[in-house]
Length: 260
Ligand code: COA
Image (cartoon, rainbow, N blue to C red; front, side, top):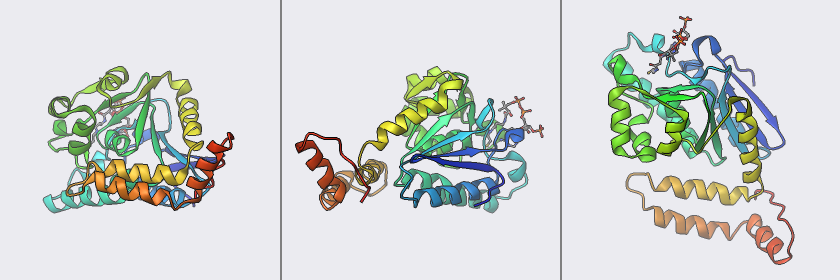
């Protein structure tokens, strides 16, 4: 598929999506959100793809936020619609994707950029990365899930401070907060992400999909995560991957998972 604002690449089971509007620090306009949705949908349905890495082009930004120029004149209704559509099309979609998504945060991850990183399954960052939710400095609040996912990841007090001050934290601070799992030099970021992806790929894709579902259930309103876990656990017993994984263990060989 031809995209204008993103690049996609697929190699040996690992897909990389690069948000590519460097002149606007990869800000998320409507078209970029739609293209990201389309790419995640297509790669999420591609059985060859075991892990997706999401990053930004250039050395400066992952994503510097939602495109401010695009919503500056919106009405109350248009504002609410922007958040609702974005959450459904991209942020919730990424969170619920059955293929693991790693955000490789290569620079500024602000506003919608941090929200997109937080919707990913986990995050790693380059040492120059800066993260924050600056929305209140523009007279608005985070609208792509930031008020919900930031407290889940860093705790309510830290989230409140970050949101109220509209300030940025460094990659090291983000690591101390538990917002990113690893910080590495910028030149090594994608190799590092690929290394983690390769470790993930040794494991059963069907089990990983069920694990994503069960972990996400912990954060869903009105859902009993323990019950989801029981159901997902049971489902694994019906897969070829489970047969292969247990047989390989007993035969003292490496499992060859096919993802079914
Ligand atoms: N929306 C639209 N355009 C954006 C943008 C955003 N969120 N963030 C950056 N850009 C654009 C700038 O307008 C500028 O475009 P121009 O060259 O056509 O004027 C270009 O990207 C480069 O940004 P610039 O501000 O000149 O870079 P900088 O190095 O001086 O500052 C930032 C970098 C990230 C500190 C600054 O761009 C910024 O504060 N961006 C907005 C962050 C934000 O509030 N995000 C939340 C949105 S809800």
